[in-house]
Every structure is written in C-alpha cells, then in structure tokens.
Length: 195
Image 1 (spheres, rainbow, N blue to C red):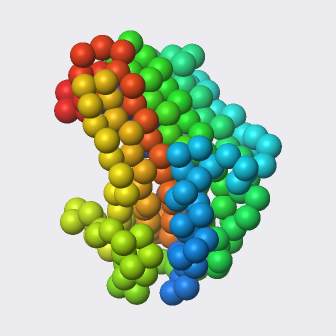
Image 2: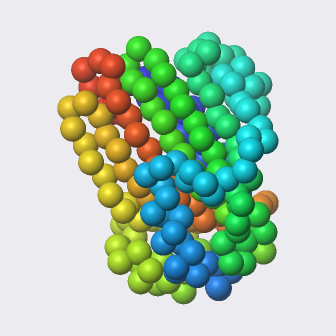
C-alpha cells in the first residue's frame, strides 16, 4: 500500500485522536471495559453519528487535493459522542474510519478521551497504564506520545490489532485512546507499509 496514502489515512484519524489525561486520568476498570469493547468497534458505547468526513472533506481540512492524498470515494470517517467519559476526561468520542483502495481494505475504530489540563505524559500515567493493562509501553514511546500494543496478529492476508495510546498536543493537552485497526489485503503485500 502506498506510504503516502497510509500516512494520510493515519493522520486523518490521529488528528482527531490527538486532542486532549491528569494524575488520575482513568480508572483501570473503566479502561478495561473500553478495551474489551474494541473488538466490536465500541458497539453500545457511542451515540448517533455527529459528523461524517469524506476524502474531499479530509483533503480540504489538510489543504491538499484528493489526488495528492491518493484517496477516492472509498474513504469515510464517522464521529460519534461516547455515552460515558473516562474519569477525569473533559469529553470522549468514537471515530470509525475506513479506506478501500486497490491494495487493501483498512478499518480503524478509536475511542478517544480528551484531558486539556494535562500537558505531559507523566511517569505516574505510564506506570498506571502498564499496571492496568499488564503490558509494557512500546520502547519507541517518549514524553509526548506512548503506545501499548495489546494484541497484534499479522498474516499474508493482513493484520488486526488493538492498542492504547496517549498523546500530547501543545494546544489541546493530552488524549488517551483505545484503537482497533484491521487491514485486509486486496493485493500481495497490500497491508505492508514499507513501500
């Protein structure tokens, strides 16, 4: 799959998830329930669709052409408000995105909560997440972004995975999200982002 397309797709979802977590960012049992719902795209946790973004909308938001993105009518992102917020969050939303091209079908559902008052990923937050999820933080994580990969299955036909991520945005604070991503190849190495 073309790297530019993959980057644009990831950026489209991440920009929405890169919004606003505090010393007590979450309660473990709440986060565990969100993680458990990831396989079902957070069914039952969200309200009605409040926003729909097409390839043309994304291109306009990023200030480029649809052709530059390499997307066509087979891109869509839906936003739904979450029915409940994680403790301490100002707001939570669910983003469901899909992209289909000649190489692959990609879907991603993200449950994201915003914490505008927190401006860094603290050691306490790192420790809380690792203890709650019983997994280690990805070694490439830093003070502005961290990821814990909960499961990841990869085959010749594609991949599926769930992750928990925290990201700091200078203007908007910290976001804490749970993501479920699935890629199904339509062509050899269609889900390989190394090209």
